[in-house]
Amino acid sequence: MQHAQVTGSITLVSAASARAALPGTVTLAAVNGAVERIVPPLAAELAPVRVNAVSPGIIDTPWWSFLPEDQRQAQFAAAAQGLPANRIGRPDDVAQAIRYLVHATFVTGTILPVDGGATVS
Image 1 (cartoon, helix red, strand yellow):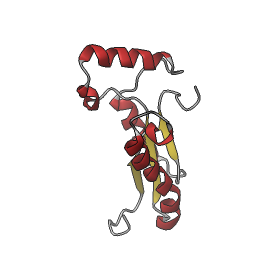
Image 2: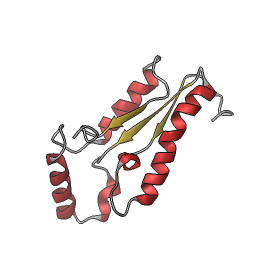
Image 3: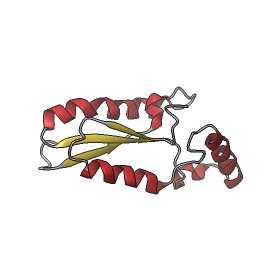
């Protein structure tokens, strides 16, 4: 990143698994936790370049294609019921958050949850 000659903003993508304790997700938790932990020191080291991250929750993407359609929809419906947003995220939700961080010139060192309120429910 230091040699990429970025002049404005770097936005990383993590995932809610960084802060969850779900069986079978230890590798995802470790990788995403590492991404989130490097954001503040990178923001300090690379200043004035701003460094932030978005941390999506459950987003309806092809990543979930390993599940049969009926199981995927049942899992999404169950998860949505437990969220204040009462729905599963869409790729555009993540894109809008990234767009915000790229243009928010007074935001740096931040991890922005894009999880429908999972972090507060």
